[in-house]
Image 1: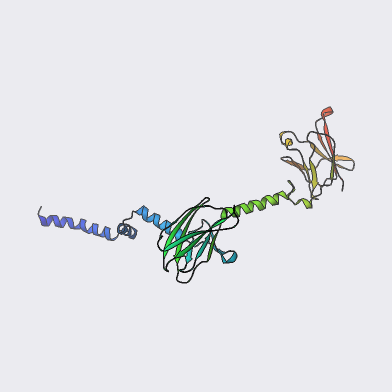
Image 2: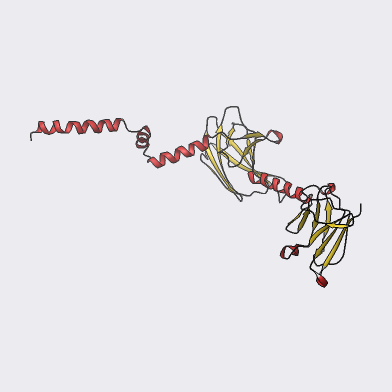
Length: 281
C-alpha cells in the first residue's frame, strides 16, 4: 500500500474524531479546561445551587435580619468602616471560626447576656468593598456555613438565626400544657366537665373518678384494670337496671349516656363486687 493510499484510508477516521471532539458536551470541555472530572463538576454545581438558593429572610427584634438555620447558606453583607454583628444561639459555645480571606476580613468575638446563658457575637469587618469570601463557624451545637460580601455603603447591622428545633420544642411545650389542661377521655378542658359524682362500695377496681361533659360519662379506673376483665355497667333508670352503650379505652370507660345513677358489677355469687355511682349536682 502506497503512502497516498494510507492517507486516503485515514482521512475518514480523522474526520470522525474531529466531529466527535467538536460536538462533545460543554461540561466535558469545561472539565477539561479546568482540570475537573465530571463528578467534580457535578459536585460543584450542587454546592452552587445550595449557595445561591433563595431562602426565608425575616425581620427580628431591633432590626435584626433572621435566617432559618440550615435552609440555605446565609449571605451576610458588610461594609468598610461599619460592623456586622452575627449573633449565635444563647448558651452556644464557639469552637472554631475559619475564614477564607483572613487578610481583608477581620472577625472579633463578643458576648451578651447573663453568665450561664450568654450569646456569642461574631463582629465582622471588611477592609474594602467588592469582597466575597466564606466563613465556617463550629460550635457546641452545630456548624454554620456563611458567605460574606462587602458593599461600599449597604450592610446588615445585626444578623441572627431561627432554629427549627426551637420551633419544635415550643410546639411540644404548648401541646404538653394543652394536654395537661384536658382531662383524659373527654378531650375538653376540665372547667367544662361535671365532676359532681359520688362513688360508693368496695372493689379492687373501684373508679378513681367519674365525670361528664353533658353528653357522655367518663369512668376512670386504676391502671391495673387494663390487665383484667372490666366490670359490667348498668344505668339505673325508673328503678330498673338498663344496659347502655359503652366502651373501654385503656383504664377509661366511655359511656354514651349522661349518667345520673349507675351500678358497676363484676363476678357472681359471693365473689361479686359492686360499685354504685350517683350524680350529686
